[in-house]
Image (cartoon, rainbow, N blue to C red; front, side, top):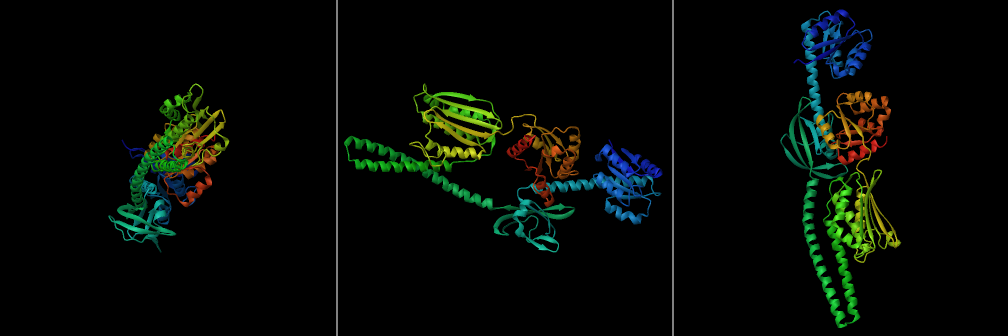
Length: 590
């Protein structure tokens, strides 16, 4: 089946229009829409859309167009279509100027015939498609290179700089020299080479890098891409491995010291029993007291060192707090029920983003505190109440006991590292619990009344608003990226995709009820900047719902625009936690 093509013919002369139209429509799959002026042409584009036309044929002697204005109209209003100019003037006078203005070919009135028109039209469309594919390929390559985590350069055959991404701009400035033709890579590297160098940096220490080079074609010219891998991380990893090995030895040493301290404290206890039985002098008891205090101090150091040496940080994931608290309570149920009557009130709540192991550490610590505050053997006199609920966008965990309460002087310092109100405490548990809460953008607080007990309250931000129906318009021209982002966010939001800014505007014209508009900056046709200007002009309230996405490489003009717009910006590939946090914040402003 032949491809369908529509030509927009802007021609006021009926005879010339008839010759051109008959010639084009004799070709299979081709139709012509003829208008007589630029004003009518603008109306046709508005009615049918710029994407409806494969080619625009313009008369250079229209009554409402001067000189090459018709070509400029075609390139502006129908930028993705090919352009052919038709003139009654001497072709030598306009040929080169018309081609520079964007026309792919020139037809002369009075000399047009079917074969010539068909050849000009076919060649113009084929050439336009070839250029479009080439530009798209280069644009995709630039996008890939710009978002690449390693530093990337593209240089020509004489090593003059053609492109570098942000990582290269930050890392490789000391590898270039300035010439009359621009920046040049001052390093003899050829395709296939692997080099290791110390790269000098302005105002900083040299950086160890590994350089690899491959041949590529860039804008139809031979070039090479050079990848610079920062070896500081490799060196740091080597140092870390050495330190980890030393740490394993130290941890084993801590373990051995702990065992020896335990044995020493046991021996001290035996010694006290012997002393008491034989009525030895009080001075020996004092000596044993000092030895026992020293052993306990060493034991505290061992506990702290073990905790610090084995701590591992994890990526934040969605956590069901009610389930986590239920599991932790079950693990302590025997001790809890030995101390007090256990009361649970675990409501379904929104998930939080967090490290399950670290959040469990907080709950474990608070449960143990409640158990120790009451002590065993009094379940008929005391209660331990554990609850989980949600208030607005905060998830609350409360662990309350009916024990003796916390003295005011202890309450003021209870979260200080090293401070403890327990005879055998280290002052690390509650300090660590509060640090974990703060690291999760939450809080840990306590209230207490002497003789009535204490209540510890953990507050964490919910991972998303409780309200449903958040609609997101995702403007993304790369189908693979759009699919990936729908997978990433589709469980939380109702997401629809527009392929570019123009398609998004068409949707908004009929449906403006969007909670958030997630807009790519770099798109063909109407990019993110042009879309935002249009939305701010025609749908101003929606401008406050726009979030921009970028692969990383931007021009100073775009950076200035982003700063002036005041809109949030997310880096590609999207981080789920950061994306949800930003989308929820924007959605809740309405």
